[in-house]
Image 1 (cartoon, one colour):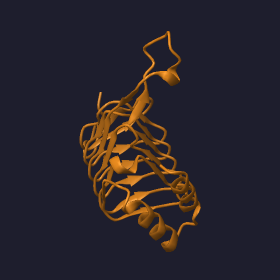
Image 2: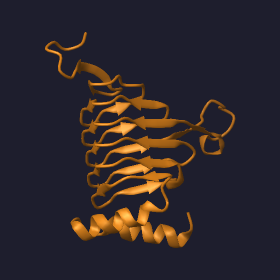
Image 3: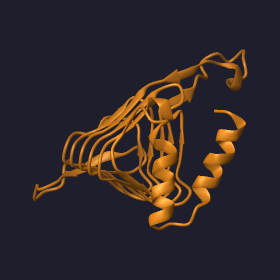
Image 4: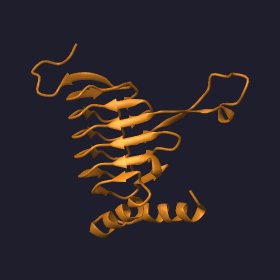
Length: 172
């Protein structure tokens, strides 16, 4: 991203919430994203590596959400709710070579898929290589490191399925 684009991204992120702020944020990212449906994003919203990010329709991003598709890919379905201060990051730093500083090691990339009708609670972190199945709910402050089956309610660090939506009894 050029320095000018970085400045513009920061300015767009700081716009107040409301119709004008939502419209300008969507306009700013629309041409940069791999695919883009209709979405609303509150202040503090940022996307890095936008050319590898796809966003469906009727998606809502709450305040302070960071989407980082750099060195990977992120696909977000339709009717998704992403709570305040969530982070989706499609790559990690390699750290297996103890003879080299971590910052000098290769990046390990992956894909994040958030299927339709998913709700991520506040402060959720989603790491590379994860699919969150349709209709799932991820509890606040959870860290998702493995796939979550459809219609699951998952919580914790790392996130584990606590129950299935619609089921009367908790899982396990």
